[in-house]
Image (tube, rainbow, N blue to C red; front, side, top):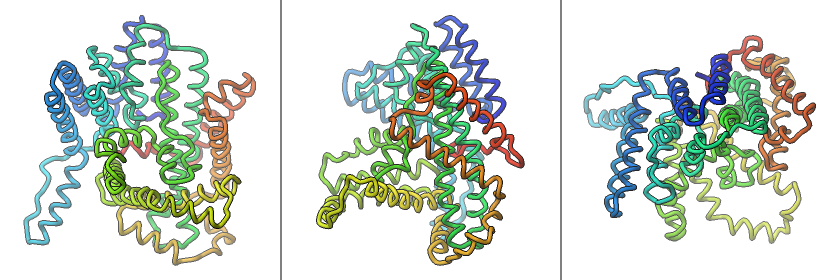
Length: 494
């Protein structure tokens, strides 16, 4: 079930009404049933996987909590994490592993090994697996006590707003809120208003911006060999826009849906394209995943506690694993490695760049200095996105080569850019929508609050004008617009 579908428009109000009417003790059970129904709308048989992950990590958490000796606790963590990662490997990475193994063995005349399995990638498996593993590690570290109520824990793993594409919640944040459902009424008018506004803006980002940018991106990347600098730069820029509007849009709908029910999910995006460095970018992009890797990969590897060389190695490995998490393909790995290189290079050259800036007498306080840093960061991120979006490493390099070697600036004046899938009208809609995105991002950056919360503080007439404008734009220019059909969310594939 997609957030941007009529099914969800029917499903969520039904969930909400009964959630409000049912006795407090029945609310978690109702949300759990709704969450499993929501997940089963994609592929009912794969509910077995989320059930297994839930039961395995639940039992493991209890065993860790009861174990008195550290070696026993470590053993249970190792078994639980190993089993869950093995399932993730089987469904997401086995074919990738087998394909590369066959390539290696073919060099020595070995026979091809065919996969005995035919699996579809279970939607959301990377997200709920990481969330459950994080819980087990938190119990081991003593950050949270093992949850004894199986209903509460099962709801923590499968809570439908963030089940299939995050945010990847932490046990310390979400579990206490789930437990409090039985104790007090979490629904408030303020949560309803701010949650509704958050959902509308998320739908606008997805259906008006991301799905419209998708059309140009798909055409440019599919036929990159026909285009020159302008089209290829435009394709890279619009993919940067698309993936942000798509994934941040999903996160906002998830956050807004949960907020209406009185549950606060963590923020997942915070104006990442305003970042002044790659390190800053990763503190604002897919925050739930980047902090997960920091807490459960980077720090256990040693973090920055074992010297600079080890710190650089840990950063590099963390980003390599992050790239592999995003997909079973080498171009995702290269994307992660490239960001790892950015981070390590930034760490190594940081002091030298500071000295050069000081010697040149460059003032760091003006807007122009910050704008320049943000611009350079966006270029670096955009180059990496080419590897993320391209179907292979070879295509990514060929795309970038043509981008820098095939100037065709005359297309800016001969209207041939309107042959990339969007006519003049649709291109104008996208441009105006992007201006709205920039305006909202500026509000978020300056006011330090998410758009739904900002709107909830405004006067009633202003708030409803914005709501009605967003609804009209979604209906007229979104999924229901001429010749457009709303695509699924990008991160469902991860």
